[in-house]
Image (tube, rainbow, N blue to C red; front, side, top):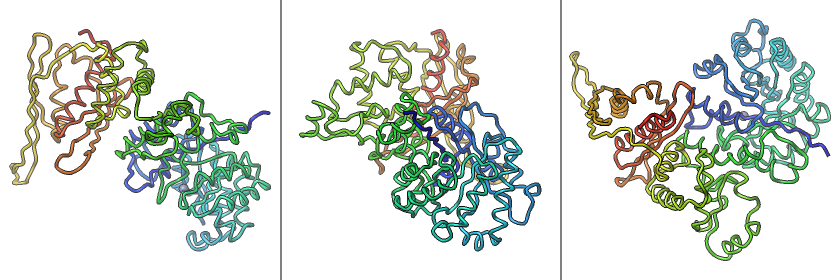
Length: 531
Ligand SMILES: [Zn+2]
């Protein structure tokens, strides 16, 4: 039997950006969009062009993505024509494949929040869809408060959805904006909508206020909806949105869905899911949720005892799916064998070919374990893991040696009598037989150190001229006076390749120095600079 296509729509960069404490930079948005694209998400909603400089810049760019990159914004304002609404104009001008409009679908909101008539709200939906279609965009309509609106006035809620569909919107998305609707209600209401609008034009956008956003999304699919909207790790305002990281494996691995539906996430992409989830947390400087379904560190962890011994005999005894299908690992008091296969999987992921029986792999595993115990997190720092693996397998040349560095931070009064903090770094480097000394001022100790370090590397300078630091993240581990600092640095070169390196030390400058060194050396290794 042919399977039906089910579409996934990610709104991490728009609704997810509403999360308390989350503030995406342009670089964050581009990196996350690339991860989602790589995963095979059909639609990536980038943000709200015209609403803030980051989103305007994002939508001013051409992006090399396969996904349908979607701009979000409001339908034309009541009482204005579509051609005389600056907000709508910004949306129509955005470089995007699709436009997702949000409109009221609850008559109570139309009256109280929008202060307009039901008919004017319908006209605004029709005009906006028409204007976007005329611009050649695929159109979606988010029906805000659809479920509460349907309970209050089903005829009007349906009329809003129908207005967009009749005008040619590809998708009408039913939003549980307040997140309080229960699965059986979602199933019943979506079922009623699908009698009026074909299910392959109906989407679900669920919030998690009763911890059932994922269940509500599945309820909508059972009732006929064929698009699911959600976010990575369930980011989103209040209690978050439906978590795509939980939805995707269920759709791929549970027969109820896998036998009926095709999604654009391949089996190979599914294996990257744990990595994607953790990479997002690292980017947000958050500790990954250990007990997250499928991808959490503890999702397949079993303490010793009868469960563990049964799992050793046959993993299916206590596992609902195989951990490697989602890129996670089984943890049963990490046996040497299990640890080794983890390291082998990592080596394969970064593209380093090693014989699986090479005895140095056991040594690498030992080093990784020791280092992770003191705070290194190699899952978040591919380039540092790459170097560690190459060093252990004996293939990194020693290009240069930093024989000494000195960072000086001074607060003093300037000529105008204002208090200023001045930072200067001096670095002594030995390249072959040459000794070099460089000094630089920076807007902080790490910046000064970075500038001094990269100022003169002699014959290697030409290899690192295009190296750019694009992100710097610090996390203090285990708190208190004994705390150690973990620094993650993300770098980029003119080819657009990005890599992340790590440093750990009780001293933040030292941790930063390690990460800076790894970044430079990784770049030299990548370009096969002659030793
Ligand atoms: Zn929402």
